[in-house]
Length: 358
Image (cartoon, rainbow, N blue to C red; front, top):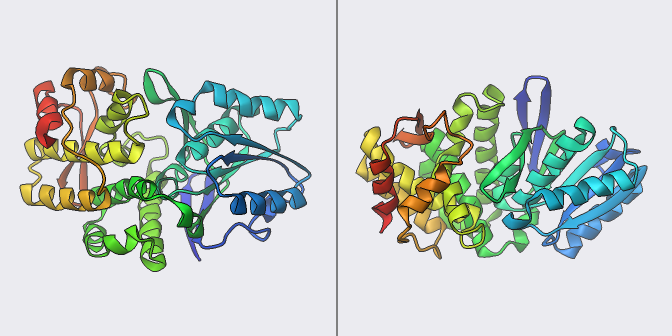
């Protein structure tokens, strides 16, 4: 078991990485507390039953609510259902929300906690690779709006995160690929040695070999925790974590949050951002090819040669929350492991990047 410290000023907490973490010993923080369990409907009954049994035996008040984990349901309607449950069952400001599920469940659990009675506690048990290396760490909580992804949200840090690798055993291949997009992102923006290790060990990670998988998860969380500790509210280097996301979120919206998953969109978005990096930052074609090969290996069923309607995709970017005034913010690479913020990109070059995969 590995404990990773997230050292945010005034809100220090741990991310615990290991196996079989759903047990009463780890849930002692919730003893005699009011607890609402927010459950991802895709969680296998085995884990639901274990969590429900443990929490009902510990807490002073316990209820559950299940949500359908889709981007189109990550909205105000689902948020209202959680708030209504809390209010109808008379939960106080000392209550805890517990999120057991993927990135959507983590995001909406955190945002419900941030907004109920001006902020209550929450802990997370992320159940997908993507949520374990990304959504559960750093306190970004949000819901979607029809005009853009994660447009309504708050920074609200959890009290603890339990990253249980054994929860990944039921994941379909596409969900593993979704998470690997974020894993590769962490290496590309921050750690060349980690990138090279991923090149060597990607097949083991894809097959969920325990040691390789736990090492990848741990290193990715460490990278994100280091960045978040320095810049909680995304005023500077935390923006590096958005590498591939300016394109990626626009791609998700382009497909109506149904055609492309978050991980697929980020994978495509990173390749487009690397093309811009070649134009603006001198990112080498050799590094672009190596990166593309690793992303392709992690996403074997994704067709990268998509002829996007450039005007529609660029319009989608215009509502991106990472804009500075009228300028879009892109995270580019100078080389593998070294990121840079650029807000001065010509629209014709954005179009070139969009069409560079066709």
